[in-house]
Amino acid sequence: MGGGNGQKSRMAREKHVEKNKAAKGSQLESNKKAMTIQCKVCMQTFICTTSEVKCREHAESKHPKSDIYACFPHLKK
Image 1: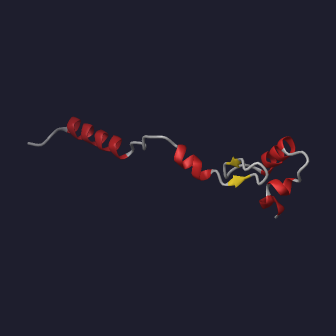
Image 2: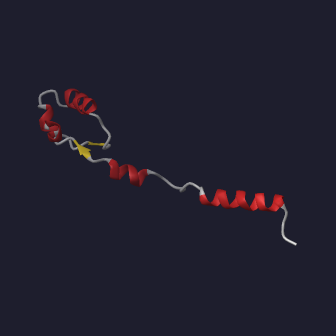
Image 3: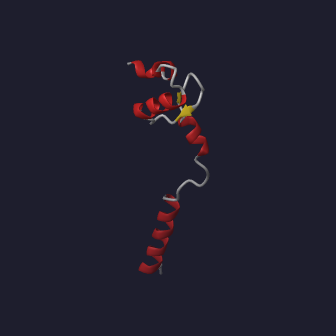
């Protein structure tokens, strides 16, 4: 005589929770890997999704005497 609907529902819920459990821990390692843009003047790193506008802001505020392309050669394209 097997379990009833209540037992089946409980088992399905537990199975679902186990399968969808988020990975615990820190994102620091993945954030470090995403820091791929680097200012060539001061070597400060930026996350890979940094826009050209943010790169320009950095170059203008931190290195006003340097050309933006000296800081970020990848923007020459």
